[in-house]
Amino acid sequence: MLRPTGRVLTLLELLQSGGTRTVAELAGRLGVDGRTVRRYVDQLIDLDVPVESVRGRYGGYRLGPGHRLPPLMLSDDEALAVLLGLVAGRRAGLTTAGETASETASAKIRRVLPRHLAARLDALLDSLAFTDRPGGFAAPDAGVLLTLADAVRHRRPVSMRYTGGDGRRTERTLHAYGIVAHAGRWYVTGPDTRTGEDRTFRLDRITDARTLPGTFDVPVDIDPARRVLTGFATAEYRHEVTLRIHGTVEQIRARLPAAVAVLEEMKEYEDPSAEDPAPERWWRVLLRAERLDWLPPVLASIDRPFVVEGPDELRDLVVAFADRLAADARRA
Image 1 (cartoon, rainbow, N blue to C red):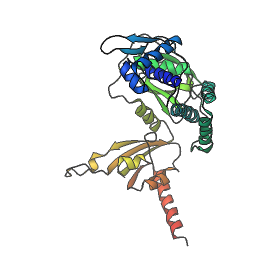
Image 2 (image 1 turned 120 degrees about the vertical axis):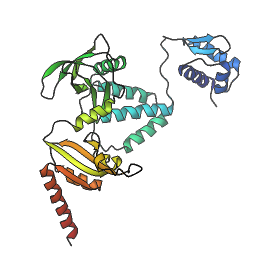
Image 3 (image 1 turned 90 degrees about the vertical axis):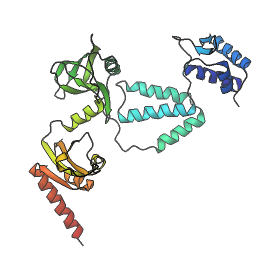
Image 4 (image 1 turned 90 degrees about the horizontal axis):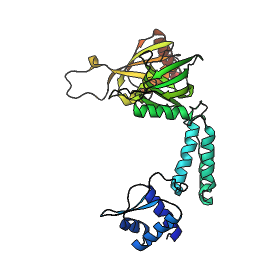
């Protein structure tokens, strides 16, 4: 059973969740009568918590707006969720350039954890393993991230200085459609007003970002995450590969995700007499790669009929891979 102090803190948590709470609702949640609720409200007011009384049929109590509230209070489960989120975010590289902020936030929460909960958290972290390497990526500046987020929400152009992979700095004006976190990095995508081309920029290479006057329209069917992944799949590499694979989208995407390959339906290979589209069909698969030696085992793992349309070098590698597998299978 909650002690009176615990009930007062629970009352504050209920009011912090927003809206007006009736006396009857609060009394039911706290397991007390209406008079006791009013006494708890008076205790919060004595602590300078801005509780307002709302009169009328649907009246009750609410927190006054624009006031600084006492320190944030978290339940055991909430504290664990926040700490695990900080650990996972830091590990995946999804933090801002001020990595110290993540560490100090974790330390502050850990200092106030009950001893039994801190011990359980330590046990979890000691037994937790990650399949990816620790995030060693450069993180974006927090100011840049927040400026771009504001530009996306309000559809305002943003001016920024960008350092390309070759080290060259350029001034850009971007109509930012969205921010995307992928594989430990942050990206922003949208049209570059100088060139008129759709571009994707890494946030850790952006400095001096500021929003500009004016607004722009965003296409209704825009998908920033898909634009970023498609950009990866169509980036300039040494080899351009074209395949035909017979299977479902799920079967192909399991080995060739959107960040690697683009899929196109091949309706000319469909049976026009069929009443319903077959779950498995022929797809044209387009991708670009710096090397080709990783593709034969990937195609074999899909385990579906395929045709290499090009380049010839990949076709030779597939034949050599198949011969090697056959020779290994016959070996005594």
